[in-house]
Structures are given as C-alpha cells and as structure tokens.
Length: 227
Image (cartoon, rainbow, N blue to C red):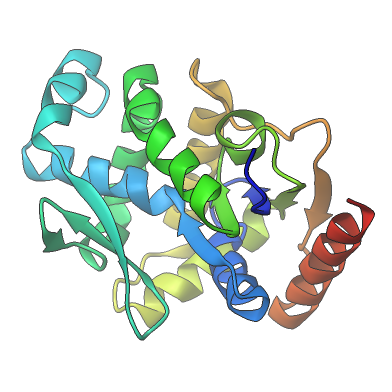
C-alpha cells in the first residue's frame, strides 16, 4: 500500500482548478498533475489530424499513434509532450476545449489514460485536478475537493485568461462555451462530472485568488491532520 498523499480537485471548466492546484502544489511540495492537459493533448492530436472528436471509432483507432508524456521545467509548469513535441501552448487554443471535452467522453480514451494518472499518484504526493479525479481516477484520495463558481464568474475569469494569452474571445462566446462544456461534462456516459460524496465543496464565486487559495489550503491541512 502506498504511503503517498493524493489531493483530488474536481470541478467544472473555468473554476480555476489548474491555477490553484499548481500554486498549492508548490506550497506543499507536491507534484502537480493537470489531467485536463492530458485530455487536451489527445484532443489536439485529433484536431491536427482533422478527425471527428465525437466519432469513437476514429478517436480510438488513433490512440496507438499517440504518445503523451509530461515534463516539469524550471518555470514550474507541466509541459505536455505529444509524440515528443512540446504542445503546451497549442493545447490551450480556444478551439481545443471542445475537442478535449468530446474525446474525454469516450470510455476507451479514459481507460487508456487511467493507469498513467494512477501511477503518478502511487509514486508521488500529488495534487491532481480534473473532472473525475475523486470519483474515478483516485477514489481513495485522502483529500477531495469540488471547486466551483457560477458560469458567469467562470466565463469572466476565462475571458481574462484568454486575453492574457493573446487569444481574446468575446464574453458572450466564452459564456456559451462554458455552459456547453458544463452540459457535455455532466451528461456524458463515461465518468460524468459530479461531486464525490466525500468531497468538500468550495464555491469561489465571491473569492479572489488569494482567498480561494487560503480556503483550499485550510481544507487540505484539516483533512491531512484528521488522517
């Protein structure tokens, strides 16, 4: 049995999971694993090959051609490698969000990546964020948090993030994409987005980044202390 500690952070698109998880992992000295980036990498490959991300046969048949790996560099970011190429920036293009959501709905894709994610948690103390970490990937995680905010607040945060990346999108379009992504994630047959029964709910609608981070760390330290 592993003596490592796993912190699972789930929640809808744009809730700030990645930014917060990356920050608290540094403070705790844990390995940060952005599982959304892994699915985005698969989505990017499907996009680059002009495949239909909703076609399970097309996506599954492409899996043997895809090698996904991660590299952590001095900037502290999880760099995603697709067949040896660093695609960290490319997978964050706005159009890749829907591709990631579509390919992640296929059970075969999730099974394909499941062991990769679990192996990281066996070998390291991890902060892992995604849609089904506490419910499927790491059901025995010592700490489970469901991070959320209203769609409007999440859309505003995502809009600011896209502007900072140099790929601005109108607020109305970002909000529409967020709502569509929420529907896709909560209605898919394979590992739909839902709060684990033993997860702590943290709504950051009225919290800024520092307040959200403090609230997260408070929950984590309390849960670890209770072990």
